[in-house]
Length: 629
Ligand code: WTA
Image 1 (cartoon, helix red, strand yellow):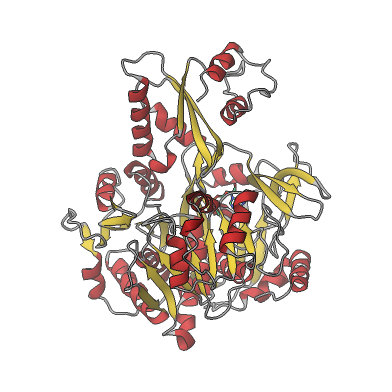
Image 2: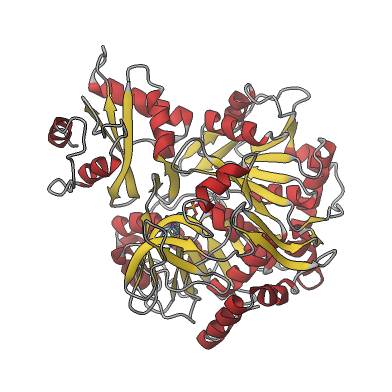
């Protein structure tokens, strides 16, 4: 399954495009299936219908855990590094992982959860979050992890959309020098979530939280009562494994649905090949389980490969900006996978925080979530990798389930800012706005994928039409990523960023429409428009233009209230960095806001606003430019 040379990659790539079914058939044979498939692939992008390993049956946790037990019962699956730096970190072996997952799965069964039921996971970055995902998968339930930084309202929207039956949470979370309430947020949300019958609350911070009799149960008390074995429930390869909500350019976040069989095969294959993980190495991905990276490359990919991973509860800057480097030395991390926003923040903190650490254990560095600028790439390469660790700039999305374009560590020649080449099985296409394919090298266009791969999105929960419309309708017979992309003279890919109304704030996907509707909730705001703009640390910042014609408040008061509204409706991650009050917004005669112009102004490209002749009232531009923040 693991490619050893660049030539082997080229060969695998060729086979994977000439005969994808044969290619994936032989990779899938490396897993345990309760029943094999009778057809590798059935698909069309029109509906879309995508089925991999048709009619096969499996349980992914058997592949993540049980399969490794004969050789690895005592091997560490996870090293838990707590928020507070200390010497009593926890090593969790594959056997312990098995026992914890089984106990928790038994509790879920007792709470009435059965195959196909949805379970919401709203947890800090602790091993129990991973146990929770696996416990659901053990019994065929579908998990929906909601990032712990989302507000009660955001939690309500997600729980109700997928009709979750149970919520797994904790009393609170440690985050740097703060304690964040979790259960209190869940309590607030559950006032509006009739589908939820029970919660299970893990005691992390020791805070005394309210428990509703009959509804809320204590995690440890319940799991301790259960046996450490639970037979895996076998499900169809196409039965959903999880739902993960992500932002689009319109409306509320959508629940991206991933399958079981295809997702398993692709996350394991991509993990082993991109990072070139070797037996006994220590791997650390700093993502949160609330995002797709935490699903595919903390939980599933590494466990499927039998790896040893670090789970980190803390943040990069607590107690100081040397924390990542300290953890790398402490646990002798070999493979380190993080986001450009973290790299830029730590670069800004200065080299004094890097100097005390040797970082000699590092072999491979990774980057994910947003384009990595060349400066940050070089800083990472020089100061962390000491110019001897390949950097894998991995491009992918919640919808793709796994990494699609990336160097294979040590095999593919890297180039700063480039995600380089597609993994075997991935057929990228660049198209122009008319949907015509742009062939050859040294070109730029919208990035699409021509052929299905095993871990791709299957549907958006409860609304298949939305899935079709969002990803498969823009261009005929192509999956559209929403990203712009260059292909250089060598055929290397460089992702240039979103071409739709989705922002990427510190690697977090946020739709402009979501932030706008949160701002509109403020009673004095009659209209607003939100765009992303370049931000030194976050990659993109949020710029909001608001029309407030009548108010008794000062601008400072209004700003604060708007920020509060966004925090309440979405979460602090979606707070605008800049709020400009304007009299009007640039609109076409048909009333459409011209975001292109607002984006240019926010970017500071004032001399080049493009064609403004179609505007209903060109004078608004002048006022906006004059008042720019
Ligand atoms: C962006 C995160 C450039 C891109 C795994 C994509 C990237 C969106 C990269 C998906 C990269 C992710 N280079 N851009 N290496 N990785 N992106 O769903 O715009 O949270 O469409 O998945 O992040 O974000 P998501």
